[in-house]
Image 1: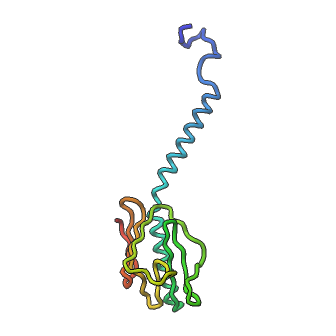
Image 2 (image 1 turned 135 degrees about the vertical axis):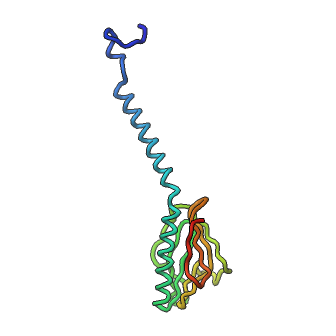
Image 3 (image 1 turned 90 degrees about the horizontal axis):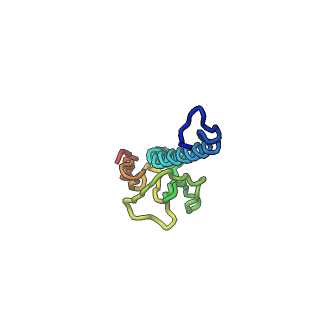
Length: 154
């Protein structure tokens, strides 16, 4: 047999089998899922920055309107809202997880041992800090403690 396909060739040895086609489709599907996960994995910086800015504005407003201190605990995994009740900082709700990389840098020495990383006072002041969202050229948000939150591309 010379390996050519023609009118006299055996149909059992010509072309692809159904199993070969299924294996090829399965391999392509796995590669497509891997590529889509890799493409969306690093895009959490902008979403994290927006989520942080929303929480920042809400807690600042709650502290002023409620005339009681509020706070944000910042961890490498996410952020959590806290409030001060009976002289102790207590968690309010669940931790909201980051989708990308986040780097937090306080600009002031920490307060008491249980104080959150960002404190919102009833007069509108906050802790001074900077926080970077995303890797490389992500977004940088910062506050000097007096003028609110400023976020721009880093």
